[in-house]
Length: 142
Image (cartoon, rainbow, N blue to C red; front, side, top):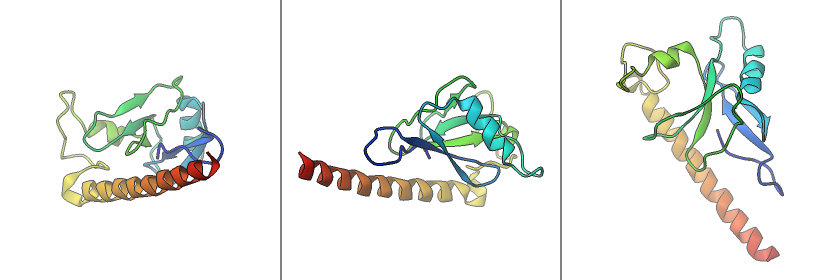
């Protein structure tokens, strides 16, 4: 996900979900998207589709694509960084219509959209817990 991690620093690392392997990879703040894609592709099995680029996604929002020289960024609560493969590009037509004939991580008919929403809700709940903990810590310190 695009959540920044670690204590005492505002941007120690970001997480990128690899759609091919299902694994989450961590990158230091300030990492170029092209480097991240190269590293992710280098860890894939030969049977897994390679990543073309990284994008930030949030249910109900337009995805934000990162070019090879873009710096990975956390867009906040609910935004997730993930890789895009050719199959993922085929999912949305040029007019923004959903192509239901392709295998997509957000395809409604196979329950993936519900699983994605459940995952996002889980991440939102975790973020709420972390924000509450941080507020309590700041109150103690301040």
